[in-house]
Image 1 (spheres, rainbow, N blue to C red):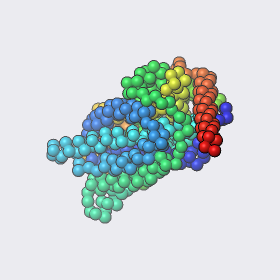
Image 2 (image 1 turned 30 degrees about the horizontal axis):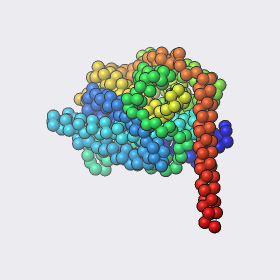
Image 3 (image 1 turned 45 degrees about the horizontal axis):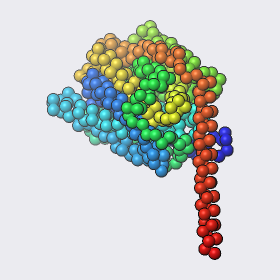
Image 4 (image 1 turned 120 degrees about the vertical axis):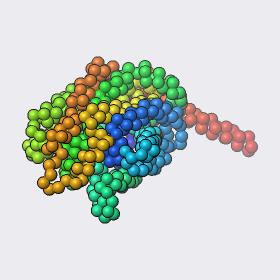
Length: 531
């Protein structure tokens, strides 16, 4: 092998990987964007119970993610470390995703029915998290195995975040409005209640998006190739925990992500905010507001993710990460201040204010996009750092840390949202009454956002998407302010690692060549003796 020539992925592999990443994020956002809404606002499970279900699931995922990361790091097959999981897991994820939106009725009837609904919701959500992890960790971990070139890896991670953002963004924008539209059609055509129509509408919405997402996700396992060969050492779960604990930059990233958990509230509360304040559960208006407000955030997000590789060439990763987090706090805080200063209900009808909100969300999205790519890139750097230090390459367990962060931060944000909703009484019976009022709105009736009786509900929705995320942005820079892995040090590490790998390959090739020569000489001698 020629010294200095780095193995990397083809354009075809890159494109297939990005399609699969988009598909996987479609599936993730069926759950991330719609399931909590479905539990609390459709089948009316109380907010605190929803929070407990999701928080307990995240505690289990904390264990499950790292167990799965260890399994990936132990895996050696003809397909590699990650591909076997990417081949076999998408279909089971699709099935569990659909089952999560299968309910037996509405919470609030008999005690037995309530127990059944909560038990089913809990089992499906926990099971979904377990199965999803089996596909998620290998999908991210394989990026470190597809190329030896750190710049190509950073580009792939950036494109992956964009592809995931597109898949997830389309799902976030469309799944709730589309499910509401399905519900209205079913209510009108079958003569069922609006509540039952909405429940079945969400089932159909989940079914449609799950099939599309799975078809895309499935491609990756069959079409990509792993090029970076891992060491033969197969670490135990205990050894992996010790590895993570002793890798200072990795622990700094993990702690930063955990402290930034309140930032996830923007994703959790966006649907209720748009549907109850802006759109009053009208499917068309819900989609319009999602495009205007959510579209601003996604546009900023994609822009940030798209320019992240170029920025990483010019500036230190640590500086981009920290400054982006700090800068995000200002527009988050501005959202709540504007709400407090604006007369009741005006934010939904004032075009200048809606445009201003879209711009604020766009700014947040831009910095969030940078942080998202930087987090993945810095975790990949930590893998190189660990391989250089110990000879062990912990792709699975370190990218398990990334999936762990995504789930844990969502769990923490969910319980925070549940506490906030419960504090103002925006839960179960109150939601049922509000839904019934909206379903029976006449042309001359006041909208909920214009009624003083619902002021606390509307206030809490705006508060959740603004002040806690702003605080999370500030907290997240504390661990990484003095980040332990400098960019210059990482460049030296990558250079030395590639030299080691290529020397090892050259030695292996030389040994194989010598064996062939010895075998050839032996054959010649045997033939000579026979003659």
